[in-house]
Image 1 (spheres, helix red, strand yellow):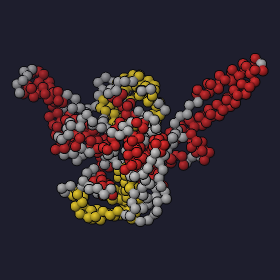
Image 2 (cartoon, rainbow, N blue to C red; image 1 turned 120 degrees about the vertical axis):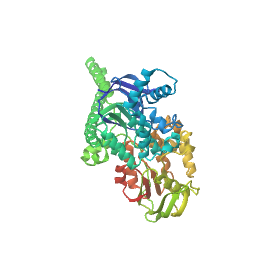
Image 3 (cartoon, rainbow, N blue to C red; image 1 turned 180 degrees about the vertical axis):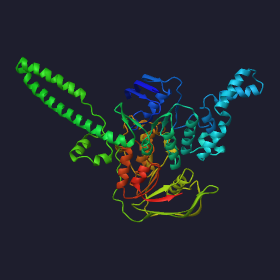
Image 4 (tube, rainbow, N blue to C red; image 1 turned 90 degrees about the vertical axis):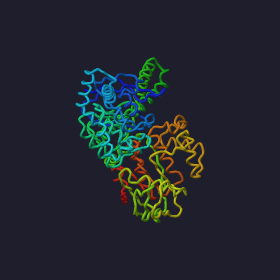
Length: 540
């Protein structure tokens, strides 16, 4: 056993994220931690790592176990270089390097300390460590120059590669990895999966990336403040979850029936109890039964993937649909006029000083899908940002070195960007929604704002006053979806739309896009999403 969690409970204010969680992590496990956005997955990782001590319960780890927790954001490290950030996590590297330097510079005379340190440095191959780290970063297309510049200069995908390199050199026995493939290109994602599969060490990964979930051997799902543990990978989870959920639906349905019958008995006994002592005793007994059944009848969260639902008997499906967990609700226009060219790109070359790509040609008509494929740095985001700037009659940051971009008439664009624009970050969620509608000159009143918040699973009272910068990754993603569908767009531009969304939300987004009759240009490295969307492929 590498780690044992005993009766873990965590509250934020008066609300519990989870209660009395107990589980073990065994050496060699490859575990995925999943759950709806806001259920406490990242918080649990911080508790397991020792970063968060404010919780109830106990965590026991095997002696001398080193744990590495990855970061999604580098707010406090942004001025640190990637090289320094990685080396700081290598056991004793800087400490022992200082000992060697001080002795060799005559600042220390402790020969025994020097020799033992020298032996350790040689044994760990630390004399070549910097070159090895730089070589690994170079494999991820992060140059030596970039490796010595501030982390803030790197893209989201490049920061993920820095985190992956830090794990490789950390000499840890347990890796706690939070959303590792967000912003990665398909090559980086393949490399992460290959590395994860080859690990002899233990990994717990928070992810809803179905490509990653296919290669774990256990899935822990956070739900209803508890955990469910599923042996096997994503396919095994889908099958087991469907079976368990249907059993839970039947149990809950039976409990509701028992509660209804118990309530009838209590109501009848209430009328009869004045007639005799026997009726009074009977009524008291029925009332106790009713209160007990009522206390035990708690509605669980029910979710089954769409493919499994389609294979079920209609009667079973009807019962599931009646009780299933509430999901985000995306309303899209399916009355957009089909046909007509929305976008034409001819012989396009974009760049800054030099072209990032050239000779790009494609068209997008209404109801068509175009998948823009390419590794990080190929120019996918540059293309999207240029299209958005021109559509809003602004000057793009990239130079249009050659070729032309032409938009169709009456084009209404909805965009999903990887990062929320800085104009919104300091605004409360409610105000950010109003500002988004105002920017597109679409009226909205307070009642509609509250309705939108509820529709996208926000608490209209609590969440509405939260600053966008303080929202979780999943909450920010849902705000992006609200923004994208303002004004009934007929052309959607999606840049990694499944990042941060949980599995039910991804499914709802895919269903909504299936019914959307406008055009879609999308960038993603989610192969499940690609298979669902299809369309023409444009490779940079």
